[in-house]
Image (cartoon, rainbow over all chains, first blue to last red):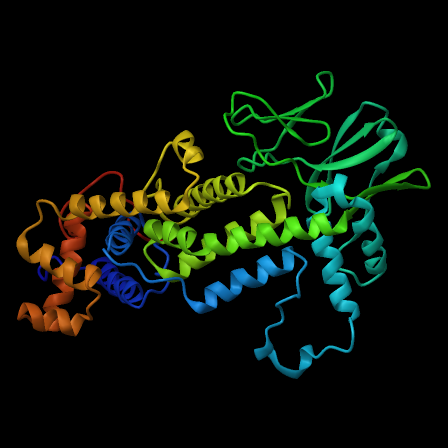
Length: 235
Length: 185
């Protein structure tokens, strides 16, 4: 090795040692820069992953997931954590919390049939300027005729606008199996996934298909019409 | 109606909580370090809170989480290692593994088999240095002491052992084709 040592060789050796140290400390290794480094990193990761005993999830990680879960369940927001100090002090419900709440409600809005009205009541509190989420114009009402399925990108979300019985709904355009973009088949009244053949009806419900398990329904975004425009709440 | 919604949401939250440990360990078995495992597993929970309906049943949620973990791991390996994951089940099989503990056990068995595979046929000293450093988690200094060599030697040995396990030649050796020269990356 000594005899053949080159700049590249030394660089690689230094990188290997850095990566080995990171794994020993259970930290993220440096990202590989070459095909060789990728191959070496893969061996190191495989060795560490195949240890007999694995560490338990850390308390910090549990707290991180707990914060997500509590927030999604509409329980007491666990964020910001107490450690962030007096700044997060509450004087009743702050505007910020209301806005956050509205965002969470929008995420959970797929329970439309159960709780749409209830959610929309609360969304009202979050409307207006300065909100992270907001009502965004997705299309002109006239663009979405009865029975039509129209694809739109709105504020970073990919949506299908669907009108049935006069009412417009906004469904996520991604399959709930893996994030493949669905194709609309308005004639059949279906949304079809090109990846594994999953199918959804125009209410976003998973239909029997070649894919064996029933999939979760498509997330639905709150939608309303005003002044000839279709507005969608993007949280 | 509001109460039903709240009750569903609370039940779902409990399923998530019970899934923290098996999901985390399942992911760890495929990335080998805490930081990446935490980020990937957290991302799965983020997606779940965004995508799953509160009234989804427990079996469905568990199956969904395992599928989401599988696809998050695939994305991670593709981006970082440009290779398939260490443990790669066919999609249908994973779709039916609803018990996360079972999936985790299976991941553990596969991961240990992969280690045996990597170490098989290596010269004894290569095997030893990898065991000490990566399986037992010793420092370079401790590894050197156990093996009765200098630290510098232990590092060289470790590098060579990894190359050997990866079926690569040392850099200085003539080897053409395929490999980039490492510049500009």
